[in-house]
Image (cartoon, rainbow, N blue to C red):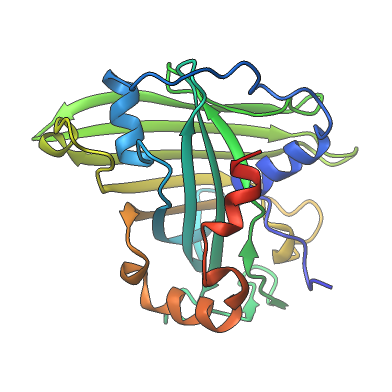
Length: 283
């Protein structure tokens, strides 16, 4: 039995939306033989994914802050790794299936935490480890991403590339995510928004033999308070985070603290992360 509810971030939001929509008609019917992607679609897939079904590994590190009256209050760090597989659907769309494993870390030492002292309330609360269930999204040719199943009534989701420009020998892609999930009254909708910038060398992207191009990323997000923080009802303010990471890593290149904790606590899927996605990826 978990000590706290999972964090309501974008990944958790995707899971909630998918659960509410369970049993509805999927969007994957009618897939045919896939044509090779071109242009911006190919660039995006090379940076964020791969043109084959290999396991795509990404890691990020960042810092979270509470924001009250425009003041930044240091909260904690995050150390997260995502595992994703991609496959074409045959009509210009691509399916991605991924899961994430994230640890919250001490804002000063960077050590993985099991308890956290809330600087706003002074209360010490248990810290969860966030391991998401596999989640699938469909990438369209306009570089927008959508749920495989319809969203619950009142929910809002926008996930798209807002710009893609060449700059100083790199391709720079900016992605915008805006979500809102309706909650039972009197609670207000939960909102999560994220801005992501991905950069990769143009020369590598233009190589016709490329199947994947490692890319650097940076992100900023804003959201409501996370349930596990145990904020008082009506507490003013919100959360903000910023950080950086990289797509296209090998398993042995992952952050040492993340590796040590995962090998210790997640032996079930760590031995073969790709198999953790297989059932959903092939569905």
